[in-house]
Length: 279
Image 1 (cartoon, one colour):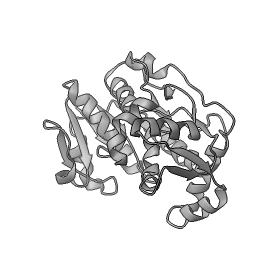
Image 2: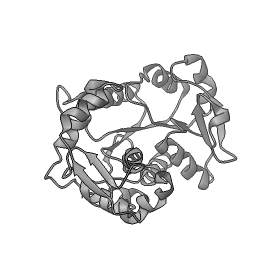
Image 3: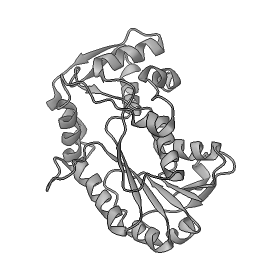
Image 4: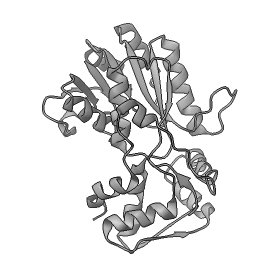
């Protein structure tokens, strides 16, 4: 039995579907099973990482766990329960911002994910870390602006990312959950190519049949605006990560293909598949 934590979020849902398509027994943990909308045959259980009383039912008979966490959530109690229950493997969807071999992480995003990685390691359960930096689904944030025209305004037009398709992340997670030889490994997952934000908007426009363009604006007003409804430290960390990529092609590697046997999906594929989300 494979347990997915965060099963109704993008990466968790896709991993549940990937495992289910392979005929693997998969259990999804969610606070609202009636709203999960997962494929028939997936075992959906009610639970919450903030409610330890729900852990026993979720972990019963589980072989391996995929952990997809919202930023800031404390999973220590769940990890301790997983270790005691006899789980044989933990796979954590971490952040590419984490730096190894340093005394202090550069920002709050890296610090949070590094802390979870340490907590997992402390359980003694064999584990694998999957680190991603900028997933393609971040582009969904463009949707609101596209309701008012064909111009996307944002900071850092030349910030470059190797945007990774959520299904590629899920395919890797499924292989690592069910295969051998991944214990103790840290995988940096990357997309098919490095694209600047301006290039991403152009590609998205081609998929939507619209002449989209990216218009660069100063970052400070955006930081302040987002900081009004999000953790300002998180916002500043995110913008700093973006700023650090300006003029520097994003790294691309063969990890997705090495593990799954197929090349990573392109950003153009992602844009075409998600065109309906921008309608």
